[in-house]
Image 1 (tube, rainbow, N blue to C red):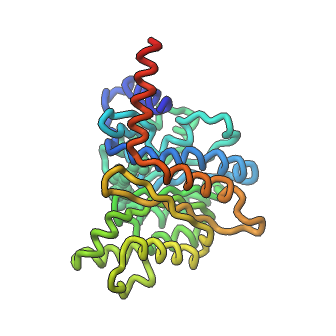
Image 2: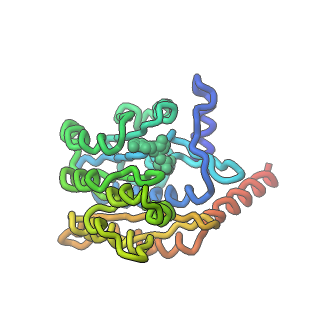
Image 3: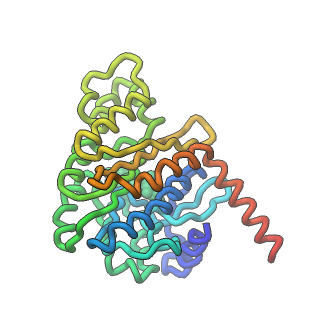
Length: 296
Ligand SMILES: C[S@@+](CC[C@H](N)C(=O)[O-])C[C@H]1O[C@@H](n2cnc3c(N)ncnc32)[C@H](O)[C@@H]1O
């Protein structure tokens, strides 16, 4: 939240006074909290051995204003740099973002420029993420990147299974996927949208069994991830406080040493985050602001 206030204050000095923000419910904050915890471990383990990149395929405008109180939180592209973390000893060498909405990609470019440590190393591509994955191997090679952390955060079913296969087969990467569970459940009921669900889920979804629900979809998706090499994964439920919810699926490849950073982070994060609903961020924001009000 401090980092969000900082990005908001810095954004006010931009020539375009109020570039757009991504304004959704408090629940959107929880995925960013998880990303915040993952980044230092990822960097501390891999960055001393090779150059690593952060790839955010559905990047947004770089600043979110969440919930009724419009609490500023750095958008996912800025989390690795805007959030100071004493545990983080290394940095990404390259940042690759895709965002199709011109207003958002311009706002993101303006906000990235506020952080000199990332601006020269950032590439924002205003194209469909499904196309950007085809460009990615070339970009990574050009910058001698050995491994990347890929965040896939669509609003719906935009990221096709074929694109997932492409990214996993052509790059060394860890994945954090926002799995749109409520959307899947809804789209499974509608004959007109079933084909979108199938191209999202991949093999095994050709014949949808009677009674198929989001649980069926998640298990199929994780099984498909395992088949293409991301054999260590979990699912973390994010509850909004209403019927709407989604899952986060972190997925990595088991190494000969096991997957220590995965084991160190995700089981514990799952336990903590699943106890919360998005509304908790609103309550915390309220308390922080009230406390700061009393202190001023
Ligand atoms: C859920 S929002 C991203 C929020 C952002 N990751 C964050 O947490 O701060 C999804 C974003 O993807 C963009 N988008 C939608 N379809 C896209 C596509 N096919 N390729 C790239 N970006 C897309 C939308 O404009 C929107 O900004």
